[in-house]
Length: 392
Ligand code: ZN
Image (cartoon, rainbow, N blue to C red):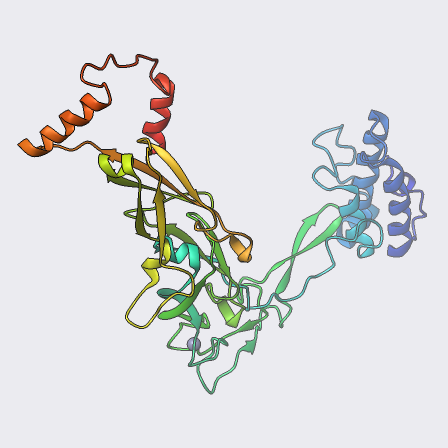
């Protein structure tokens, strides 16, 4: 069929009229719009007609009588691989469709935010409870002093990229039967920056940052626990091109304490006393966790010791709770308790006199031939399993 007839234009139609006619027909028959088979076939025909009439060489050849292989008999689809939007963009500079392909984004900045960094810090229990100040040595990227993050050697400057003329993008042209389809891609010469650094800074290789070792002071707030992460804004890695630094995260690990075990905001410890003290009662002075803070020039405001009153007849394994001697809450909210478990030690290695006294005591108490009192294990099997895991 005649391409002029297919597009419905006269033999002397100019390029604009041909384009206009094709645009109207493409909108009507494009498979994205009208997927039925007859429309698809029609679309192939009008597309092929347009391929001939939009190309001056092919159009002239057709006018001279060549048939240009017209009518490809439903072969490989014309228009395949190009969406309706692509075609409209190719023609009308993005006005026909979504307008995606020809709207540029411009050059990208060399400066980008740096990465966050994560480091671990071991502190002791008193530091976790009452807060501390810790010095820490880190290896991170910092702004290059030589070029101040610019990346250009002192006295030189980035120059506009000749390939993209500073746009950071170059048009990529795909030829098709419809003509040219333009898409924008980042410029390979300048990697999309729009500028090239002809003389990179020797100290940072043009990156604008160098790795260095620095010491920072980390303030550990009171009440932190094992696994707490502190966020230090802007103390992470500096970004390339003088970009802002990421954040530094410090993950705390609280070392095991020889005396106190922490459970939430409570502290637990055990004290062992002689059998006679458990029977008669006594008062024992014990250190608080604050005692760990005492140095030659520091004396904490809070007490570093407390008096544990052991009442007469205290049983082994009994707990005493001392209110407010545990771990302070984060942000100064409340304070946990100290739970002291009293263990009683049976005397060993009695001499004759001691044995005699205890024998007299047992006679007085009628305990020479004790029957014992039999009962089930206090916690049972699963309780012991729990204890085994809870110990650590
Ligand atoms: Zn530099």
